[in-house]
Image 1 (tube, rainbow, N blue to C red):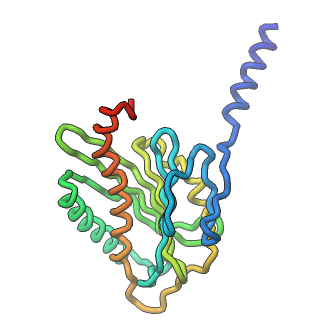
Image 2: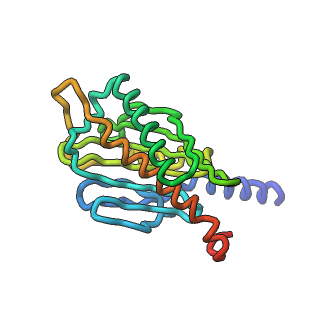
Length: 222
């Protein structure tokens, strides 16, 4: 009897570990689709962006805009990747001055990757630490950027837990764009105008960081 109970217990735990994370397919106005984890709820949206959040404060931010500067990921070389990171650092300085808050941001990685449908994306992993007075908090972001013939798309997953940085990899790899990727025919590749968008995604964390003490006082956070 004890052996049977032990077997049942092992079976239950094994089954629990094998349960997949359920997701639903989100259609972004017929422009794209992505499998969003079931525990991420859409909390904000506009004509050009969507925000999903779980009950632990992790977020999935999706935004898109006209690809007026012909952002092209496939043709990006090491030179363009370095220019991209340098431009990001400069914009972070500007945000630091605007919010009067100390921001230390660094790229843990920045490279070209292919999603499951074969589309090339610029994938960046960014670590950002925010400091104000005696408070500090660190955010980890995994960002996928795509340049389409019509629009430029940014998908950003943000968490304060480094161990969960890869938690949405399946979702990010499930992205399908309903338009062809832009192919550059020239030598120069537009970068700088899009770096600002990534910095603004960090701002979302900054605003939350600033508002947290007030929410605690109001009893909205524990």
